[in-house]
Amino acid sequence: MEIKQSKILVIDDDLALLETFELCLSELGYAIHTVANSQEAIERIKKEKFDLVFADIYVPPLSGFIILEEIKKYSPDVPVIIISGFSQFDDALKAIEMGAYHILQKPIELKELQFFTKKAIEYHSIKSELRKIKGEFYNLAENNIFITHNKQLQDTIQIAEQVADSDINVLIYGEAGTRKGLFAEYIHQKSSRSDKPFIKVNCADISEGLLESELFGHVKDAFPGATKDKRGKFELADGGTIFLNEIGEMPFSFQSKLFHVLQAKEFESVGDSETKKVNFRIISTCSPSLEVAMQEKKFKEDFFYFLNGICLKISPLRERIEDIEILAYRFIEKFSKGIEKNLTKDALFLLKSHAWRGNVRELENTIHRAVVLAKDNSIEVNHLPEEFRIASQNKKDEMFSLEEVEKKHISKILSYTSDFKEAADILKIDIATLWRKRKKYSI
Image 1 (cartoon, rainbow, N blue to C red):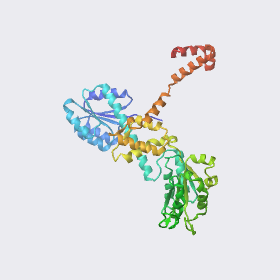
Image 2: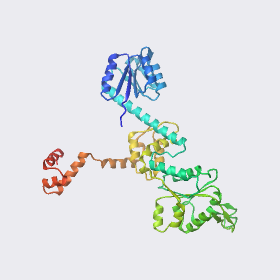
Image 3: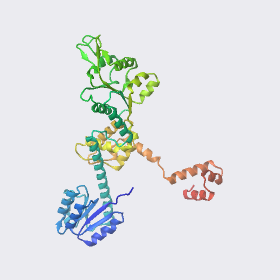
Image 4: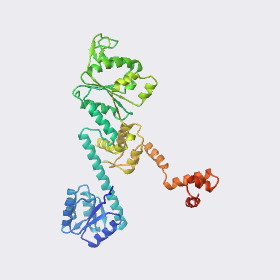
């Protein structure tokens, strides 16, 4: 892939200074364009895109403020570094207030020039990438699609869309925090039942003693405390969708009865002999622990296969690293209250290196914490939990250069062998090469 060469425009009526800029910055591999007339500079800015602009505070026939206004009009995101003499410093400060990136005072130190050029180009690159990520996020959000670049998850979304308008049972499989519930709601909203109820049952949250009453309802005086008739969740879901969240947590003793109700789509309320018929779509979720429960005979296999008409598997976040950055910026947008905040490269590296056992939910909480702690516009490494930094350092400690790996391997072979010839044979090199490498690595 061809790497784009950064374009820099230098505006100054001092021809010697323009030549110095061109020589100094060309060394860094940038494409340098110089202009000695401010009117000509504005014409170029209207037609071309630059990654960085240097502008003297006064370049005939226009003032530097007009040049800056024009740059911000046609290329609002390009960083502008103002070149000023000592006597022009107050005007340069005004330019900073108008949006200039930095001030360089004459006479200019070449190392300082190169340093700030690199920094400004990097800044422009980060801003451009952030705009791209935000653009992708808003595109996805406007189209009501999940935010992902992962091919496997995109395929899962496509299958969800295909089955949404059928009545086939759907089982959504994934670890805690992968947002299985969002998939269930998405399928309901895409179905012909979208204008009907979407009733959620948290299987882990209802005590066994209250299950029948919660799901099937009860009539007045059916049991102590039943002071009036109550409609159960299955009756409330009539015409719509019943969502059984974490079905693997359903008590084994209740599974057979629930299985029968879901198959027949009819039930009796607690304390009532009248059979009620209902029409609902069944969507369930489960975690990998359900497989263990089935092996241990704690979950009925026939019930599982009934629910598993179509299985949608949601990949854990650690398997879709490409989504971490765009999701992180989605949560920054959510929590920053309109204040733009950016992730530093080191902070982003830590996010991408993390195991994410809590998946998207953990990422959301981590970003919320970082946004609260970051008082300026940058989210730094120290705004992330300590365990992120420790885990990352452990990984870095395990990383070696090729030379370090070679030295360790040769040392290990030499410790196991009785002479250099045997070692050379094992390493598949001649003795002379082994001798040179021993000398190189001081082994």
